[in-house]
Image (cartoon, rainbow over all chains, first blue to last red; front, side, top):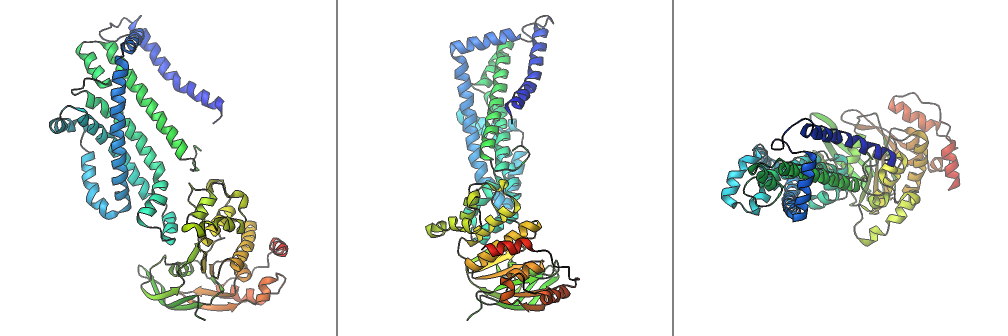
Length: 257
Length: 248
């Protein structure tokens, strides 16, 4: 994409946030909305500054990022392993897939009491919950991707006697890579959603903790700061995943390339 | 000498459709056989049975272990460069060392680093041909390799295939629906028809006729078109092919 077009796209993408910011500023100053209902942009900025200077910001941010990264990594490894087996073998699919689809239908928060009982309020329970959330998009997309692999390419490999694990590594997984990456991008977004659910219960650090604390001491500036940080983290990780996709899918011949 | 391919009472059924029943055929060592026939007559199925991509209901196909197959579509792996696609089938250093030669032979020396998305149809099919040669197959199976290409590219690639058959392949079987292509490339041409399919015409192409385009093949053309049940079209001006063939 030429730089000029890229710049114009960025300008389009920023228009709506700026409009919302203006409306927010208007409502909290001239509009007369009180600070215990909604803090103004300036107050949120001030809160962000004070969190940064006391070191609270980094402590909470790092705690959340580490949880998301670990949970996402666990789900990625499991989804690639299980998804590949299910995608390649109808037998494995018949055994595993119905159970996974049922588990997938369970709302995330339903896991919370069980995870608390089993794993306590420590890090493990949080990471497991995040991994559950991120697993299914990756798994579902990967299986669909493997099923959609061009039969003719598989036939070429079989013609050369390439079967089993070598077939998966050399043909099936690379061919399903676009689906795997789309699933991973959605999975990473899910990981951030589940992070908040995980940190709403018994966390002493993290962005979800900031949310709970802000609610308990009626500080809308702290709540909004946490929300803002979550939005930024989610957007940045989404952009990072898109960059990874562009890098790894140099060979595709679609509209975007 | 034992034949390169021996098809013995082959029966292939798709659902309740008998494609072949007790069909037998032999291909001699070093021979190039072309199979003509109307669409759906089973010519591709026969080739795929020889290439072990179709499992017959009964009967046997005895052939060499090392078979190269070129399909109608190039079937390149889109994430690999031409060079890596050609090397895809290589086992060990000996076969890997052949990659460059195979790419040179099909005339893709300067495109070796390109991804399939950057190739024209003809170039992609050349890469596919090179890939099929990496294991030094004793038998080369060509399943309508040129039918997806435009007329001029097809003539170019016919010359390339003629060279490959001469230099790199032992025995070849070509499935095509182009009578002139069969006459240009094959030692022997069979026409398949019917359900289950049988050989309705066999034609030996004189060696001289294949080497010199000016040779009069009117009689052979007429016989093949008659077997296919099609009026013989006028001879296409084959300037391109003649020119390229003289250059070699």
